[in-house]
Length: 177
Image (cartoon, rainbow, N blue to C red; front, side, top):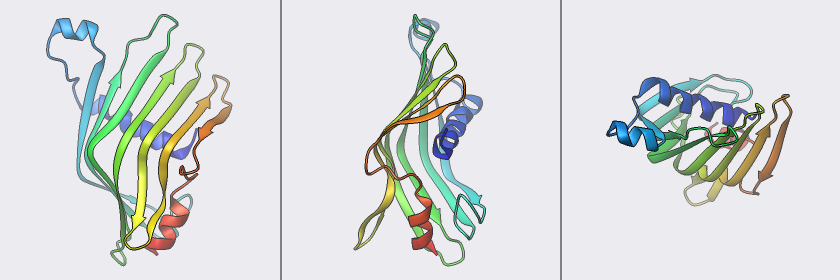
C-alpha cells in the first residue's frame, strides 16, 4: 500500500473516531450510509527531515472539511467507503525560508474492502496539484489512481494516469529548499 494511501486512510479513520455521524432520524439511519466529517483549521504537522520527505523539516498544513461516507456491506460482503473534501487546501511550507506550495483539493477516494480481505482504493480528481506562479504545474496527484492490496499482502497499482506522481516530494522539496 502506498504511503499516500496510508496517510489518507489515517485521516479518514480519524473522521470516524472524532466526529459523530451526520444523520437526522432513526428512519434515515436505517436506509442511509453513515456520513461523518472533520474540520481542519490550520492543522499543522511537521514532516521530519529525511526520507521519504525533504532533507529539511517541512510544515504540512490542512484547512477545510474532510467528509467520509461508509456504506453497509452489499450482498457479497463488500464495504464501500467514499471520502471527499470541501473548501480544502493542502500546504507544504519550509519554515526556514517561508517558501510554500498550496493546492486546493477536489475529487474522491473510494475504498472497497472485500470479503476475502483484499482492499481496492480508487483516487479520482485533484488530490494535490502544486503550481508555481509564472511557471505552471510543478507536481501532484491529478487524474486517476487505482491500487489493490490482496488478502495475502500483494500490492498492485492497477491504474495511474500520467499526471499522478509517484511522490510529490522530490519536486516539492527542490522548490521549497
